[in-house]
Image (cartoon, rainbow, N blue to C red; front, side, top):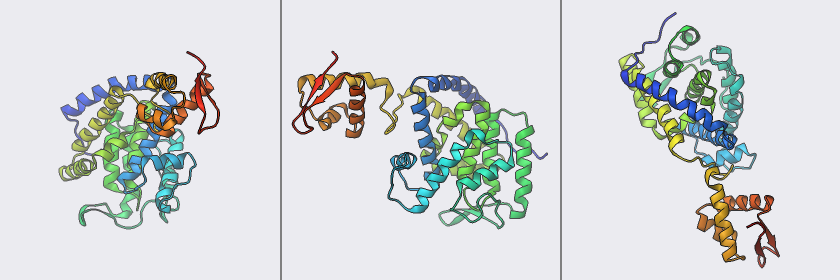
Length: 328
């Protein structure tokens, strides 16, 4: 069984320790009462970022609207890419990251109606270009099945830490470039699946968001690793990205736009709305939203929740009516 060439730097060792410590706290975060909203928000970020890296121009809000079944006016291919990614990530828990057949199955869903050979390895040569220059020529097509089988065998048997194996697999997968299209999004998905075997919460850690924000460096470390014949630069980059993503979720309150208000401050927003109503019972939703510094749509959702909880009610028509505080 050929072993991919890689070394583990002192930086990588420290990052593995940091990630291992933080991931348990992130798991607890996902189990809190707003965990479902957090998982949903992070899934949206993951799909948006992974496709944006590949040139999809839809915004995160538009991706969210497609997930919610709303109509989005955009190029049909870009909408199809989002729908396919949604269906693929819905398969996450059923996919075996150590099985080549599942790789092909996932690719068939990810690239349905986007390429003629979805779910099949490429049958011709392929190169990776940057500014019209060839930065990588992938191995010949006839070698792809053999190289992928060897990579998956190493993945199954090697005793290295799964954090490292996920990074090495991701780099080697991009080096082989087994498909005519969709290699980037499949490589990132598969690293996530591998990490999911270390801890299931990796399914909802939007590392793709970090890659999207550092695309130049992402491609640069791939190039550095190829020139060095060793994936160490890529390992360091991806581990640092995972670490930074975990730190971000520790240090920042989580906002779920369009799927919920920032849960940690919702009671404070309720209090502000009640105060505004007491000061001016005819205050408009738009005026409330301006004071709370949120969108009118988010403010309307807050008001709906407050009505459902019996905190306030509306008397009279929308134009001439007023708000009444029911509970002090």
